[in-house]
Image 1 (cartoon, protein in one colour):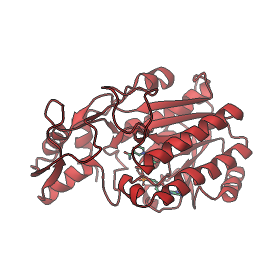
Image 2: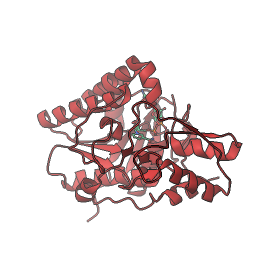
Image 3: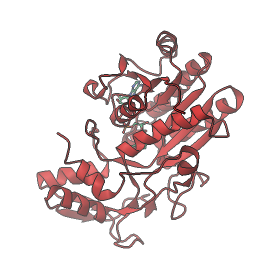
Length: 325
Ligand SMILES: NC(=O)c1ccc[n+]([C@@H]2O[C@H](COP(=O)([O-])OP(=O)(O)OC[C@H]3O[C@@H](n4cnc5c(N)ncnc54)[C@H](O)[C@@H]3O)[C@@H](O)[C@H]2O)c1
């Protein structure tokens, strides 16, 4: 039987992951209320069918009023500061917003008696790779303030879930990539691999490839690219699983990835095929701290959410980047 429609507060719903996830939640029959301060998002990404408020999730009283007035049943917390290099230069902003601000949001959620909370966490909680495929119970040892704030808030969520009547899923996304018909990636600065390769292909400027002597089949680093539509579907599946009472514990961290390692050279090849352009490469030594491989074990997502990646083949991801208007 289909689940009851929920009214879901999506923080960061004017951003890349939040907007695509809002689309998926609306498609699943839910009502969506977006709270976004438009610091890195764009109002044109807010779905027409959603209602929206411009403001910050760190404002506990305002969020409390919004939860009451909009009769919110559940929360998807996508908003964050999420640029790794920025987090190393301005750690205070990351701790203030991603940790203290998120605690304010969580207090408002708990005061309002909301029982279902889904958090956009990150593979950055793992730090360096510890095994070929990373399961959720691997050691967590973030190597930058961004990852540290994601992990610290996960710890808070686990404690709240144990103490109060709230059930939490922390979805640890790996490298979200690609575009849906409506939503594509555009971060400033753009630090993600595929948009940087696309920019190099389109401009003719060389793409800087760091490290070609990793212990991997072609010497370049392996990462896990997961299509934005699959991530959006995972967020919708998370609410469905919470509603059906399928999780069996009050807190679970769940990897959301393709489960496949793609090398930098394979990603370049995929963009070249999709764009019919060629990419010039400027090969540089490895950067400090860059692990050879970061790839998800995705068994738990299949078991708890009934979710599998359907569109996360690297060629499909690359093609999606050239098929949007
Ligand atoms: N994109 C990825 O590859 C990736 C990977 C792992 C985890 N994540 C996580 O997914 C989430 C979304 O990332 P994204 O790539 O869509 O980033 P994004 O920058 O496109 O979206 C973030 C959104 O949050 C909004 N926002 C930021 N601070 C806010 C605040 N204080 N109050 C209200 N709104 C605020 C921004 O305006 C933006 O619309 C983040 O939590 C990020 O850490 C993303």
